[in-house]
Length: 415
Image (tube, rainbow, N blue to C red):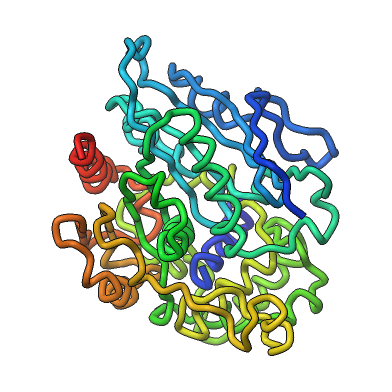
């Protein structure tokens, strides 16, 4: 069972490697994605009930509908444990965005004293947790069902264009304040792409980027390279997949075929794929494997692989020139120019020396794109012993990283 869980987790990590208009609609009813038997999960199955309220915190289950019709789950932790009411004080909002093939639960794998959302709430912040389309609690659409391949016709471009703006608009409308943002892995990629296009910046106060993913040219694992080469456009037709579900038999078979390649070590998949994580408790990893991985679209996986193979951060490449012209008006997909990110936007970037996904050389490439950023608006943290998973599950992440994130946000309060 543990081996099966690790096999499925490996697919989760692979994605890190290759890591009509509807009006916005909002409700606090907390309706979630379908269970295997076709029923919608109840509020008792939600992130609030299972991972927040049980620890003595207030938590609200919300939903937001994007302009292209996806109904996203959103959790709000308005105050810390035992803090009582706000007393009329407006708290600064913080939005946390997870990576690919996981959902908002990934921020809540340790004890309350070690989980970033609850640490922020206990320190006076109004905390919001996003869940991207296709994940367990965000499998609804105004007209499409997840069983319809059309439901899965998107990549992280659509997260940039639709998901993040919908969530930002809602949080901003509810709080009336600019938003502090925390992203991990893919959550950093979609943020950087959004900021480069001028999206969200008028509603954004600051951003903390953990294990940033923007360039993926220096992956140092054999399995990662093979996976990136395998996620070509043909995989959709070969496997007949629109939904990329790591727990499905086709994906499991795909993974096993990768593990059969010479030089690939699948006996220690966590290290093989994310780097040598220094600071994970086995109980935390067990809980992670009970809750993750989540589904994404195969198109999203292909798009992530394109970053690896092409070495540039660009919109989805349809390969055929006529298709690219139809979508973009040009033969090649447009580039996300990260040097266009406003130079006065406060940024905190933390990366690890053992991270096989957010490789040090690729992060240095990202930092080079930000070399004209205002010096007093850019905070960089390098953690020599950290790898990718340490940032969200490390037992010492509070002391090593989260306290620095908290100090960074506290420094923005009066700006």
